[in-house]
Amino acid sequence: MKDSGWMGLLTGIAGIVVVSTTSADVSGWCPDGQKAFSAGKFEEANVALNSCLYSPPENPAEASQGYYLRGETYMDAMDYQAAISDFDKAVELDPDNANAWRSKAWAHYKRDELHPAVTAITMSIEIDAQNTESHHVHAQILTAMGRTGQAMDAYDLAYSFEDRRKVQALQSALADQGFGVGSSDGVYGARTRDALKACIAAGCIIEWN
Image 1 (cartoon, rainbow, N blue to C red):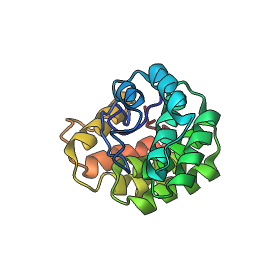
Image 2: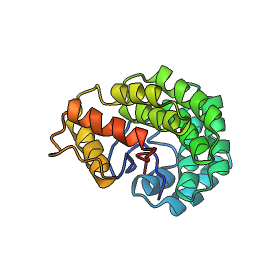
Image 3: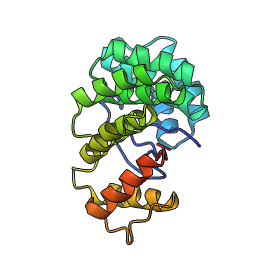
């Protein structure tokens, strides 16, 4: 399963395509790296970002975003330790980089480092409390920790923002794992919640792609 990031990159739950904003406008910095990243050419992006980060920009937000993007290329390569190192640099430079905190949480989750994963995703949610992706990642981590009740609460928060497209993707993901909800109507109602509860109780995890 390929990991992916945010900032226009294809990400999501079980194949959901979501587009997130960045914490800073860095459109003028390292254009080759950003262009390759946005096009999903992660190896090419990594090479360009390595070159650009050899002399990081003086603006902390720009430098933070650079390390965040390079970290995402390491996520794509499943080099989670290298990714964590870059995400650590990103949040050190810009503690309000919610995307970097969320990706750091996911990298720790992938390494089965659940306690630092919880710490990181909590930071991301404190910065951006209305982000479906962050609450979903939180739910994944809590499920892996066996905290099923708290995981369901996190899922409820994730899908309380009335984004029908994301709910439809969740419904499709549940159906793929044998927890069908009937038609994928994009409504986070009783049928979807019951299927999700059954999925959590069975130990299934709807992974972030």
